[in-house]
Image 1 (cartoon, rainbow, N blue to C red):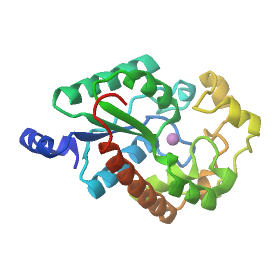
Image 2: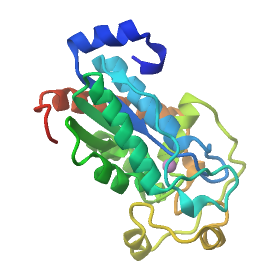
Image 3: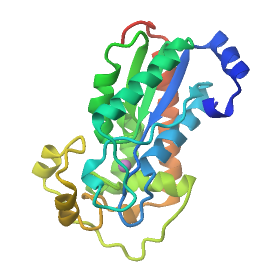
Length: 247
Ligand code: NI
């Protein structure tokens, strides 16, 4: 159930039976030549909604303006500082708490959000759980089966496949594989630790970082979406059983 499609009496009624809510976090940034600018936000929002439908959870609007400074040399990317993002997240949680929510489940879809999310949610008077949609074993098994190492680090075929299934297919037109990343590069740049915008674009001219987006299909996207929604719904249900104060 989407918070933004509810009336206030419906939210009040929901709170009589549950104090849980899912907050999706994404990004607004380039995702290579066939990936949509909103890929992360769309994945987070759609998987949250799908999970919410399975387990009866309320789903807040996606927080889609997040840190992506390294992608600012690609048109369409919109980045805010980690501080601003963390402040927005913190104040959104404060508002949810004010209304009676005590279990806040953050469903993330953008690596650079993780550190500011941890920092912003550490001391809230509600239980907070942070998960990225790719954290779950069944989802990872599919990613490995479908794409192996070509999943890469950015504009991944798995996230592109989910948006193809849910929104739109941009024709690949014989998209070549991107440059293969070294194990060292992957290790040094985990959590989206990429460099200055111009240097990042010069290094990865079409925006993909080791990810062969051209392998994505809507059918795979459907399987990934189904696995992720099921895993998130189960994890959310378990989260509701944890104590409401502290994390
Ligand atoms: Ni992404």
